Image 1: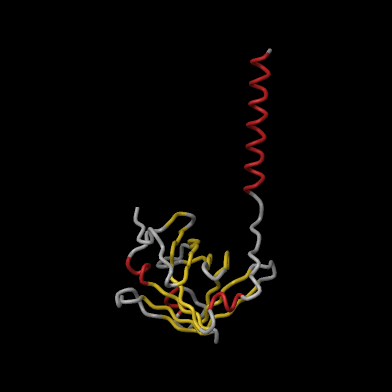
Image 2: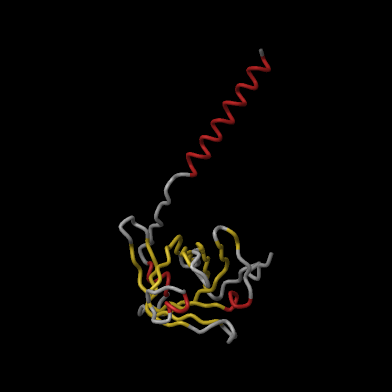
Length: 175
């Protein structure tokens, strides 16, 4: 009788753990609430430059080669932005344009980049791209976006940006 009781309890415990796991997995994503000063967090007093610390492609961490390491995005308080690859002429053209913050009806906040260069660089028709803001502070910007780099197959990318002068261990990550 004691063995049966133990196995029954273990079965019930296992069922509860599975139920909890599947119940949590289906919960909808909650929007990140922007802090009261998002424009200043993003652009500083006049301009702020960010670099990629980590990138994930469909949940898998990506290699950070030379062009990712060199990539910078500068946001200015006047809503202009510029990207470049510091010291690398082989990493593609720099981009310039305008940035703004947008919010959808579901409460999700986005960083909107507008530039005539976006259609060619991002393989899309529109001259703007929306980046869902997952986190924004003075030391971290996390954005999520869908991208079809060289094919029409969409992939979900999540980029973790830090201010340019922050040292990040293991940035030059390779499998």
